[in-house]
Length: 239
Image (cartoon, rainbow, N blue to C red):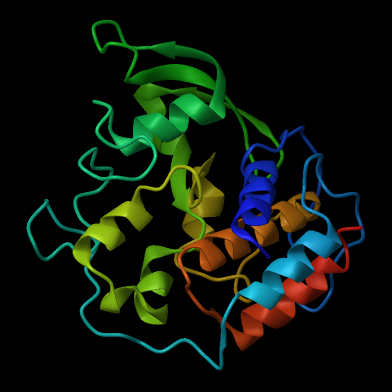
């Protein structure tokens, strides 16, 4: 798949319309046949991405991962939500979290005096549950920013060998790897990969599979054999 094709699929996945759907959590090995959410990639798109990604036998535990820090050099992916990075949205005067909220919410308002940077409120069409969620800065924990390909998993699968600059880019890449999502589902996901977690609403499995694979291909990160098997099963529901 050429770079242009990857970009087209990535835009389709990242910018999908997130209309509300009902649904229950996935049981691994049993994939509910429901209509994929509008804008989801097709089976052919996901299968093409699977041919591009490297598949590793399993995830190895690479030592040295540290995310919870206060901006010192031990934070292997850099200070959380830093604007000092060269991904899309970097060096624009707004932190990464607010950039993601601004591009993900609708009916958005901004805090006065923040130069259109700090999101105060809005509505999120949640890409994991399909529900419409109200965001208010006074209860900011209700909406999280998720790394689709989790940082800890990326570290184990090869990011520990990257430059610090590339890791910071990966952690703040609003075009590929970041989504505004509901807090409870993000907490349940933790650093799980597709063989361990999929969105609870099966209508969004195809969207998530495409998004996850786009990140893996773009950053040349392998996926595990078990993840590949799950994603192939998901692809069969994406026609």
